[in-house]
Length: 240
Image 1 (spheres, rainbow, N blue to C red):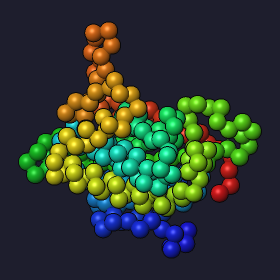
Image 2: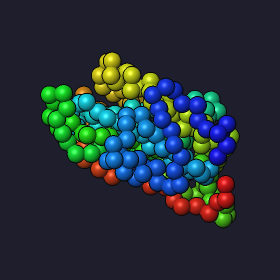
Image 3: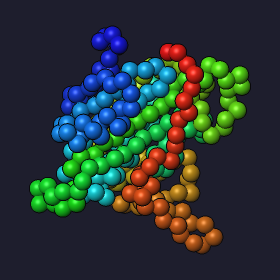
Image 4: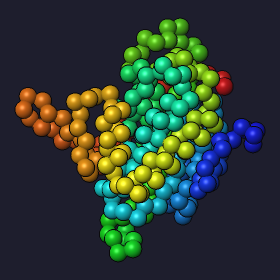
C-alpha cells in the first residue's frame, strides 16, 4: 500500500499493516506486550479488517462495555462516509447492519485477569477487532438474494475504501472512548439504544441486554455473548 493511502489516524494510535487476520495478530501482539493504541490493518480491498490493542484499568465487566464504543465507532464511522440516505443500524451486541442486513461487525478478546492499581479482575489486555465486507462475490450471478448479509458495494457505498473506513472508525471510536472515560457507560448505552435495529431490546447499566416477551424477562449477559461473534463474513471470489 502506498503510504499516501494510509489512514490518517488521531494521536494515540500506532498503525501497522499485516498480511491476514488482524484480530488474531493483534491478540498475539497484546500477549507479547504491545502498548495501548497499537493498531493493525490487513492490506486488502475486498474486506476491511483492523484490530486495536487496549490496556484497560477497570474490572472485566465494565471493560467489556468498550465493545459498545467499538460498535458505535464502527456505525458512526461508516455513516460519516456513506451517502446520507443509507440506513445503518446495529445488531446487539456486535453487528453493523446496512438496510437491515449484516455487513460485518466487531469482535472482542481479553487477556488474563490481573490486579492493576488496587483493582482485581482487570483484563491485562483487550483487543477490539472490526471486519466489514466491502464487495461481493464477482462470480455471484444473483447478488442480493442473501437477505441476512450484504456488502457495501451492493448497498451503494462502493466509493468507501478500506483505509478511509479504518480512519473514520478510529476517529469515532476515540470519541466514544473519551465519553466512556469521562462520563461512564451511560451515554454509550443511550446511543446504542437509539441505533439498535431491535427497539424492543433493552440495555442494562452493566452492558447486559434483556427482552420481555409474554410477561417473561430474558437476560442476555454481555460477557457470554461476546465470547464468539454472532456474525460471519463469507469468503468471496474477488481480485481487488
